[in-house]
Every structure is written in structure tokens, then in C-alpha cells.
Length: 599
Picture: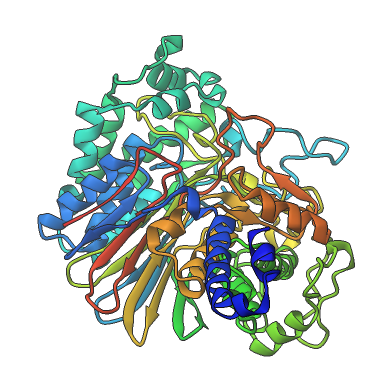
């Protein structure tokens, strides 16, 4: 109204006043864009700064463990091993020695390595093992209990990384974790609440260790894990004990007694695999990311390829409806390909080159309506690029994963994401050894066309088979510019991992947010099916309403439950200042017990 009244004044007033109005309008527009991004509510979000090295994790004790090893002369890989084992102690919901994951390494010379230590289906696993006599999925069977677990890969993966790429000894790298397990760590309110999990209450060792058989831990109390401490000491002395020694037999006997499938032979046959990373380009940056059996890297590259033809900042600010619309349509198309084609590369021929083809991305891009969403049911893949999808309709993955990012003083970098799959995995703790087993078998396609716990639809390329590794969305990513390290990124979040990493890249590279703002920005996700746009509860309401008006089905997570935080993911990020080389850490404030730490 003020602007209207000014412009209604006599003409001899208008010229100088118009300049003022134009300037005020520009400032208001700028402010409205900030409000749209949700950042106006969080002014002054600044990254943690360090000159030499940086460790960013979901738990402050794990971050400190990584820094401790770096100060002892270890490199980024040594620190990653220290963090991985420390998280197995202080973050039992996802940190683990009973799960598996991926580690992306970039050394100071620019050479990259990708370690696949993903869990593997036992030899006794079969395609229909979670179906009843009528061919229907048995609820919960792939999620809870002994038969939900794949062969763990974490111990093999971390030991392999240390042996081939570390500088210190495995015992040195594991010392902080052993200390945390034996001496204990102090629980925050959130950590104490998390231990109330019903998943843990179902199994005797889990209930005893983590819940004191119903005398639940409280804020400020110390959780000690002497059985796990002794297991870690044995691993530090000889990691092969976990796979081929007395510990392997102990695990196998425990599984057999509970009706599980993992045998001593399964453990002995487990191998870490070095795979060729997926590579792509975006706005002059080089992207190095996860290859299959992670779907994350190739889907991330396909998303970025589609978006490369749009000037996103010109459409609006970070998290503006116009930007979110275009980004969501790229998500929709790439996730359609994920569901139809991806699985374990050792068991399938995967069309990775076709999915990364820039001409294919251009064809997808031309199908995006700038004003409204394309219903997933009517989406048609561009002809002439992809082979016919594997037989069957396009199905799953848990949010209880964790990611950490590390850069050392020499410029070596590690992005690592590992998981138990669901919160506290299968709920089963190995008696006498003190660690939880994963429920990673749920990441396979239990039945084609039936969604998993995350609602993802996958093809027969991800069906269960002996020794097979389930499809994952984990997307540890390292980004460089002109040969110099620029970003180390990743997050947990199940099916939302890929979209979160994509949004982190867009917020950084396209929209110019600092790395702490990137970590905290409100999230949105679309995975083709179900055909809905998921928004975090703190996603700005005006943008959500605008997207709804465009035609999107909106799901604002937990918006009706104000006690629920309504969040997902946990971006643990590092940026490198291109001018000064200073390391900038962004710890996701959604988890208040983590931190970025450096020196």
C-alpha cells in the first residue's frame, strides 16, 4: 500500500521517489527470497573453520576420535577408521561393526578409490525367503530378528582401508573406540530417548546392554559396553578373527541358535571390493561419487545432468517454489530409472553409460513442463537411449545410516557412509560380543512391485540371491574444481539420501549458501513412486502452498504432530575455501550431539 500511495503522488514528486521505491522493492524482493529459503529464521549460520584438518560426524565423541588420530600423525583414512569404530560405540542406532557401507577416498594427488564393504546375502538366502505360502510378503520378517541380517562388511572394510591407505596401525586407529566402550560416554537427552527402541526390547542381549532390562538410561548417565570393548580389542589385534577365527564361529553359532542364516563359511567368504567411482560434471565442478551396488552416484549424476540446462538461481532463491519444481521433476525422472534398472553390478548388466548420457539428460529435460508437475503414471522415458528394463514392474531402504566427512592436513579426503539399515538394525545383539546385527536384507526386492520400508519400488535386478549385495542409496561424494578439492559430502536418509546430496550440491554451487546453511536448509524429496512431494516440517509454508497449487501432492512430514521434529537426513559436510584453502565444516543441526571439529 505504501508503494501504491507514493506512485499515486503528483508527477513532480515521482522521479526521485521512484528511485527510492525501486531500491526498496529490490530489498524487499531480496528479503522475500531469503524468507522463502527458510534461512531468515536462522541468521548467522556459520561453518566451523580450521586451517589444517576437519572431521564432521553425527557424534561429538566420534569427531573427537578422528581429530585425535589426525593429531597423532594419521591421515584421513586413519581418522575415518577411528570414526567408524567410534560410531559403533556411541551411535548404536546406525554406527556399527555388524553392518556395512561404502568409503570414497581421494588422496592428495587426486587419485580416487571406492571401497564397497556392503553387506552380502548369506549362501542360504533365496529369492522368495520372505514370502508366505501364498506368495505374499511376511510383514517384518526382513526387518526384525535373525533372518533379517546380511553378512556384515564393516570390520573387513575398515581394516582393509587402514591396511592399504592408512599410515598408523589398526590398533592405534581403534584405541579411541575401545576407550569409549570400556570407559563409557555420557548420554544426551536425545540419545537416552533413542535407547527406548522397541526393536531393542525384543531381544535379551539388546535389552540388557542398551536398556538395563527396563531400567532405562537417563540423560547424563554413562553408557559402558565392556563386551563390545573386548570385541574391539580382539579385532584390533587380528581383524581376521571376525571372519575366519573364533569370533566368526561364535557369530555363526549365535545365528544358528536363533534361526538365522549367516554361517562361518559366509563370514569366511566375505570380501571387500574396490570399485570404479562414478564421475560426472556440474557447472565446472568434477563430481566423484558412489558406483553400484549404490544407486546413489549414477542417479545423482543423472539428476545434475538434467538440471545443468536450467539457470536455477534465475528461477528464484534456494527453496523457492520455482526452483523446487524443476529440481523435483529431475528427481522424478532419475528415480524412475533407478527403480527399473539398478542392482548389484556383479549380478546384472547395468546401463550406467546410458543413464549418464548428456543427450539422454537433454531429452528428459525437454519433457519437463515449467509450470506444472508431470504425473509419474504418465511419465514416458525418452526413446532410443535405454535398453528395455529388466522383467517386472519397478521397491526400498532405511533411514538409520550415518555419514562422516574428513579432510587431513595434506589434502587427503574421505567421504564414508555406512549403516545397519533400520534403527538399531535387526534389534539382535550378538550375545557375548556386544554388537548389533544389521537388517540389510530388507534392501533387496522381497517381491517385485511391493514397496520396502521406504516405499521404494525396485526391479528384479535387486532380487535376493546368495552372495548378492543389496541395492543402496548411499552417496558419499567428493567434488573438485580445476583439480583442487572443493567439497566432501554425504548423508543418511534411506531413499532420501540421493535427493539430499543433490540439494546440498545445488545449494552450494548454484545458490551460494555457506556449508553450514547447506547442512541446515529444509529438505524436499520425490522418488517417482509414490507420486508425492515430501517436505520437512520446517520447509517454508508459502512455497509449499505454491507447489500444491501447481498440482503436487504435498506431504509435509509430521506437520500434524508438533512434538515430532519432522526431519530426515544428517548432512555432514566439508567445503574448502577456494581462495584461502581454509576448511569449512557444516554439521547438520538436526542432530544436536554431533559436531564439526578440526585444528
